[in-house]
Length: 192
Image 1 (tube, rainbow, N blue to C red):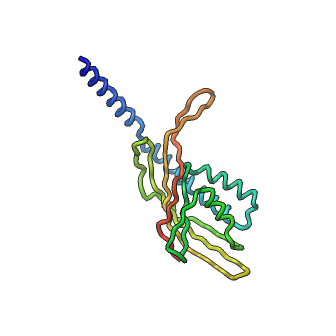
Image 2 (tube, rainbow, N blue to C red):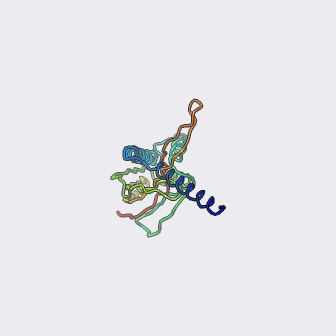
Image 3 (tube, rainbow, N blue to C red):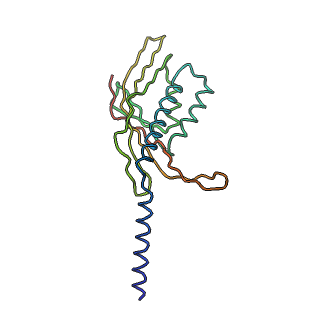
């Protein structure tokens, strides 16, 4: 009798977990909204990187923008840095990447992102989150007037996108929503 009870309890829990997992799927309309939010956050990052890297940006403004940009990322995310002068790719924590970008030794820096698009659909992970990848192309131009140094490159980058259900309190009620966070930014290719 005890074994039968354990069997029924096990079946009940398995059915409950399966039903819960199925109820957590994202509808096509919700997925489209999430995709739009993910692409919007990547475009925001592009704008923030351009502001932080610009030599015309005041130090206090660059720091404010760094704070905003950091909010786009999941904890521990890293950003890749490459150069046409070396085959090495260095990875830095997000804040450190922004600090290095702000300190580049150029008189003018222009960074533009283009051709932003999903390259992998959102896939559900065992922990309940969804993960996808957005690819971008970054055009970097740095000019030093005094030395006449002019550096340009184009880098293809893959940005990991995390989508997870979160909760917030509004007027005493718990509201669930899907949130998008950016993960690691990996360099996949660099060219002149």
